[in-house]
Length: 329
Ligand SMILES: [Zn+2]
Image (cartoon, rainbow, N blue to C red; front, top):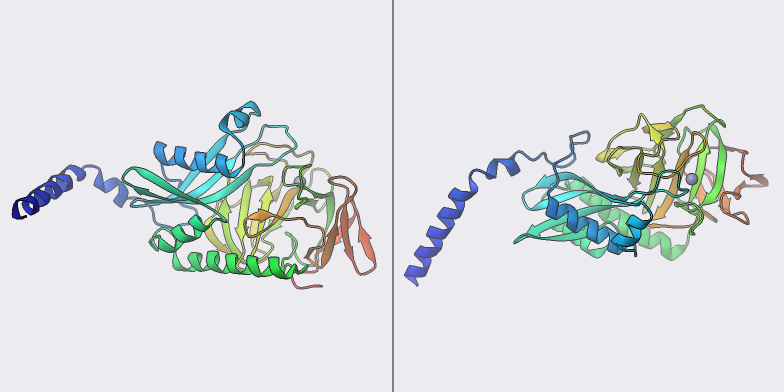
């Protein structure tokens, strides 16, 4: 017993000495919630593990993705000891009428093996709860807890009001560039709508639809996700001069970026707009029947052709939507 104990101490000492040269690297890792902090150098093993999890979650294969010129992009935003947090996106081919789908991830390394939790799953919730506050701060943890609980509640009651504003100033009127359509164009659910203040080249400020935590999804920016405490998630794509948030708290009406035709993670945009998408919890849901900014949306006979109603007023594509704010019925 005594010998074994002494051996253990000796082994621990040598491990300690051996680990000294590589130790400072992890000590220098930036903490969580640093907002505009520079991206952390990813590890190959971590990147591969997250990419595999994302491909599995998307229900496709790496071969199918590469045949469609799609790639998995892993953006490690935070490291703390054996922990990592970031975003991962499946990019789409340029010119394709689709949009990139992505997930927040949390990861923990044990004996060289990475355990991955993707947003909206139980492993994600469990790992976030176990993670050190230096990786995911307490307030951000609370947002994830509130978000999951309220998403389940709103799904049960099938309530139309979302408590969300439209993504521009209350009182402003913007044009419907494209009515309800899928985040990736034709495929349902038709969760998304294309909006800009004017048709053509004007660029306008896109604002947070409600308070929450904002995340930068693509390596080259342009795609922001906000996880709202009230259980909804909103997505904003084609942004220019955009924030590069990293779990940054935002309030309703905070600036996110400008409408543009940028496609930093692929896809296409014919004229300046924000591609604004709705998720309940972590999953896209139809806009039809939901109320945002005082308007209740409906689908047309095909993607992009629907619009919105308020009282006796119906607005279709190229019509103007006045933003009545988050609580207008
Ligand atoms: Zn769109």
